[in-house]
Length: 178
Image 1 (tube, rainbow, N blue to C red):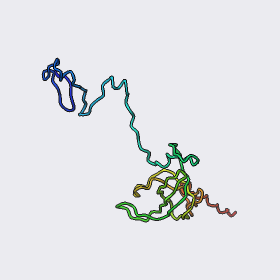
Image 2: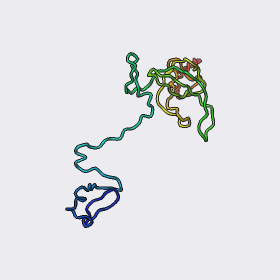
Image 3: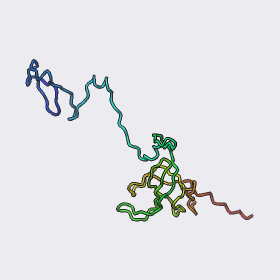
Image 4: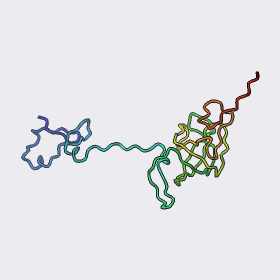
């Protein structure tokens, strides 16, 4: 007759005499696929803990109180920051390019690397920018995008399609001749 299981070892009732001191101290837990399962009483007392996930853009989850110099966890859709370095980097294999990135010191005190989308930009050191979440797949460590057309960042020039993503203004329509 099956009695229980310790780890991956099955224990038969015939293996131990239950009056034996060893059997009285024996902890027998149900096992499913080699993983210890909680007992019903353990679930009643503690319950199940839900998985915690790390944020994909952790700098957007930090708020800095400048008066008390303390940080707290408050989620923001965007953050303002100042460019400390504007440079180009090369992507991972198999891609080849010169990607434009900027090191940005945020108002929360963190410094992050963010991508400058679009063709051409006017950013330099001390430019004030607005960043949003969103990684660049072929640039390791770049988890943020700079929003074009806000603060000191100009929109992409001569952009006709997808203008809202690149901060480009609507072009003036030519007057129709009659």
